[in-house]
Image (cartoon, rainbow, N blue to C red; front, side, top):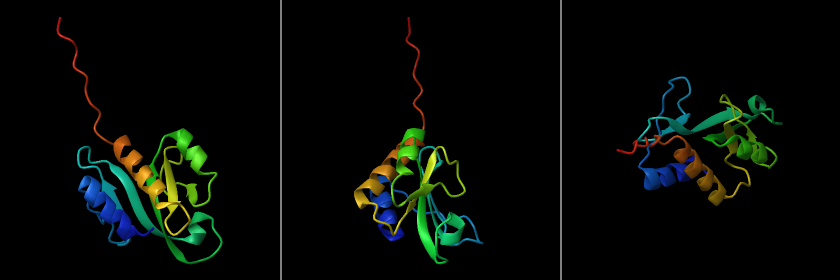
Length: 127
């Protein structure tokens, strides 16, 4: 799975285009929910050493928001790490060039997108 495949998917599904917010990290791309303005994913190029991995090459990872139970379960699987530079209880990092199936990555993107959607306000019943 590549960042380009993710960008194609989120553009088709949600009309999202990547935002490049940091001059010092031009390869870091934020994906923002159109309704709430909140981030639902960030794709970063990070050195393996910074992730606690063996090696010294730069790899692409993506952080997505998940419920804490899902985060705990995913951390036990290959291709997932505690969230890099995010809340580790509510976010998970996915190593994009790992064996994580494309469909699973898309499902996690969808869940993250829905998690940051604007909350619907319930109207009080008129009596």
